[in-house]
Amino acid sequence: MDDRFNTIAGWALFAGIIALGGGIVSSKFFHEERPEKMGYAIEGVEAEGGEGAAAGPGLNTLLASADVAAGEKVFAKCAACHTIAAGGANGIGPNLHEIVGDKTAEGRGGFAFSDALKKKGGSWTFEALDHWLTSPREYAPGTKMTFAGLGNPVDRANIIAYLNTQGSNLPLPAADAAPAAAGGDNAAAGNAAEGNAAAPAEAANAAK
Image (cartoon, rainbow, N blue to C red; front, side, top):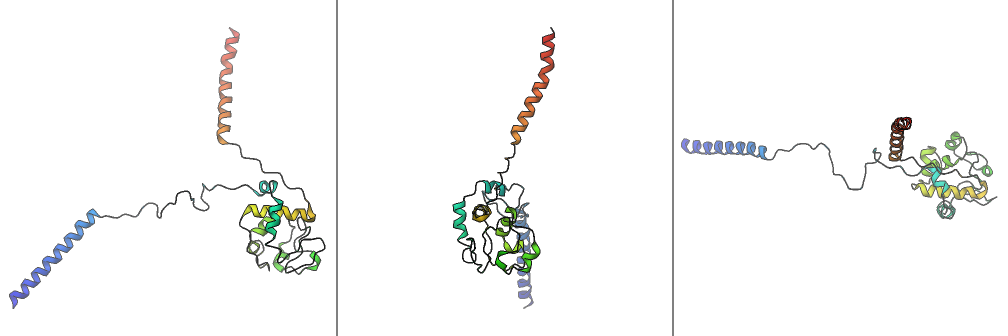
């Protein structure tokens, strides 16, 4: 009986030694390290807010080329709550005739504006309207406005241009100046340096 027990124990010990040795050997061949950069890159997509993210045209540029007819179509999303004709009655939201440039949360036929918008103050400039249309809740936290906002900057510029034609008629801003190309500046600087270097030589030749 003891011999049989010893035999079984010996084989069990031997099997354990083989398993331990196999684990050590396999770890040498299949060693894993944490990659320096986690995740997988998707071609053509840049990380949001990254340094290489290209900024789109500014509001002034978009307004300078805005499509009023397209803005009227976008305004259809607002027509359920707002009228825009001169003398039109307020609805769920105030009448928006002559809204561009007007004071924020004042007038509008006695419309009951939210305290959040009253505290905002100021006037409906092009910039203020752009911020408001992007996200009313972020522009004036606590506003009664339930519209989520327009994420497309072109749509916002078009609707602002349309609103402007409805009684306000303020002059639209000129497009932003295009940034100068870095390569062009370097080339101009190089040409100027070459010209300055050539000047003494030309003067010396003229003196001979």
